[in-house]
Length: 245
Figure 1 (cartoon, rainbow, N blue to C red):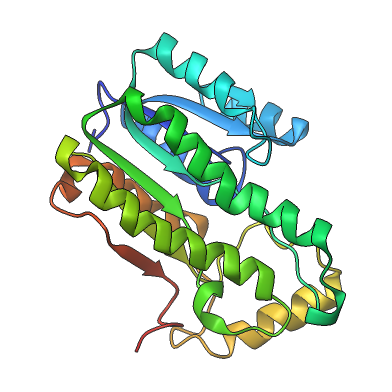
Figure 2: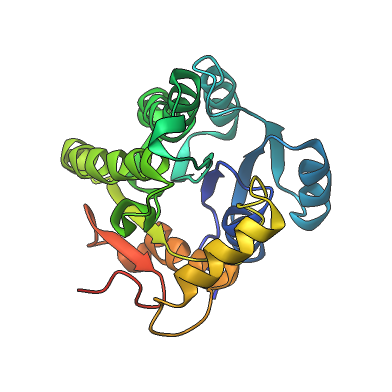
């Protein structure tokens, strides 16, 4: 399949994990990709993998960083797709929550994608697709993840409002909700804590395993493609059944 021939797609947080897997397929399917990341070594490695993509260092938590995205997007002639995938995670007991901890996560996971979409909205072409990456943490009631879960819950809520607002322009807005996916996203945890956390989550997954970055990215690519032309305001869980009701 060549679903993205002639299309320009911006993917934030695309130098590792789900974003990198998705950006790679977009390039392979003929798309013109603008990708962002923060880690210099990840950017260097992604540049070799994403042949022909433009990759820039851009911090979703910085409210001024959107200007660079606007400039790059204008130079590319606008966007057919926007995947707001960049995120930041941290855990801690509620008694350990500080203003700095709260503000940093909210800035990256909520304010960041909202300001990015606000700035880039005029550059979204008619019929464009927007995908936001949330997390099943919004539904898992994990005691140590209250702030992170709140940011992802906020993202899901705001996406529905944005979908309604952009619908008259023919622009679709949907949410990818990954569950336990094998990525480097939990490197902020110690090895022991990460093993304990992942084992506990996997024990509640009906399919009894973690998902792969390819499996999660495949759903985002569907939502970005014309195959999902009548899908908006929806959330798609890729979680092995973790959150099924």
